[in-house]
Length: 171
Image 1: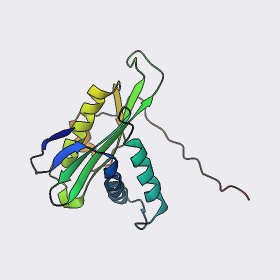
Image 2: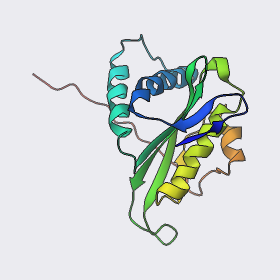
Image 3: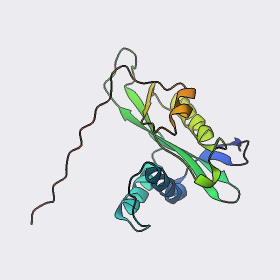
């Protein structure tokens, strides 16, 4: 699926497996902007993320990534989504929930509407290509205005999180 070029001249399209490295690069930019240490280009998480994206991009019924491709810089923005199956409920008979993540834009192309265009394409995929009727995301302060403008609101019940520590195996 290719969409007409955005007002800033980038093409918005669905990512393919050959875009996995670009998705990892944009993820590193996003994590770094969030204050997380991402390490060097050979950090182990990057290889694991590359394999993960490569595998998921083949699962077109439950995973999608949309990218903005700039004529001079290549892939400069992304919005990624995944479906998760929950038990059906009265407001969501399919039980399918969507989750948006990895919304990121290269600093050289920020403020041009690429993230919005990628996210619009992703939300259209959720609406027409999946059974998801609940879409969640975790927002940074920089992205809050964009997400609210697209209709995202705080959930009625707050999300909580528990981080388990991973112990090294003995031996």
